[in-house]
Image (cartoon, rainbow, N blue to C red):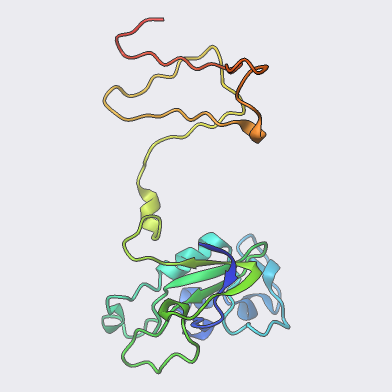
Length: 207
C-alpha cells in the first residue's frame, strides 16, 4: 500500500477486463443512472478523462476484481476468451468508490502496453486523492482466499473490563495488549503505577 500516490501507466482498460467486471465500468453502469446498493456511482464523473479505465467499485471489490485477473502463470492459454492482462495491483480513490486495475499485458497474442507499467519500474506520481496497492505474489493478505482462514479473536475495549476472568487456551498462544488511549499517560498521578491493573495467573497459580 502506498498512500497519496498513483500510477499513471499500465492501467487496464475497462473494455479488456473480464465480462462480469467490465459491467462495473463507470460509464456503462452510471451514465444513464443506477439504482441499488451495489451501484457505487458516487465517484462517477462524466467529464473524467480516465473513463476508459475507471471502474465504480469500493476498495474491497476492486481487490476482488484484481484477483479475478491473476494470469501470471499463463492461464489465458487455457481460457482464450479471458482478459489479456494480468493484474499486478490497483488504485482506489481515498473517499470515493473509484477503482483502476493495473498490470502489463501477459498474453503472447496481445500487443505491447501503450502505457509504461509501474510493475515494470515506472515511477508513481503524487496524488493525495488516491491510494496505490501493489500485488506481491506469495505474500500474505494479497488474495481473497487469505482471509478465509480463522486466525483468532481480537477484543478491543475502551478501558479494562473489570469483574471478569479471561481464560486462555492452555495449549495455544494468546496475548494481551495494553495501549494508552488518546496518548494518555500510563502512570497514575506520577507515581509510576497505572490506575488500571491486569493480573496474569498461570494455570497452577491462585489469586
